[in-house]
Length: 117
Image (cartoon, rainbow, N blue to C red; front, side):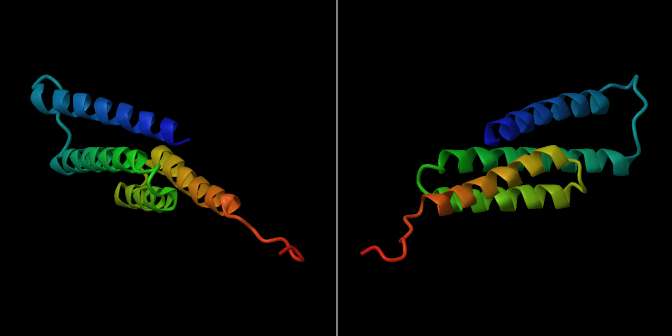
């Protein structure tokens, strides 16, 4: 789940930078209004920051899976809210991966059976 979200995030970031650069530099294409361009660059910045944070979180999974799961939940929620749903698929994948890390950690915790010593 995390790998799919990370790959999709990387792909969308690459497509955004290419299309935004072409739209900004090319004089042949009709340029959108300033507000639309600013929002597009903002979404790109959120994608890029999210990509970097998820890569860092992926590297740190071995150290503390619980913290990594919590970070994924926070990153997914912030990306979803700040881009007004433009990162819906990636955000949902990061949130699901975070929940899975949190749930699997609870399953792995040793449990005591009633009546055992």
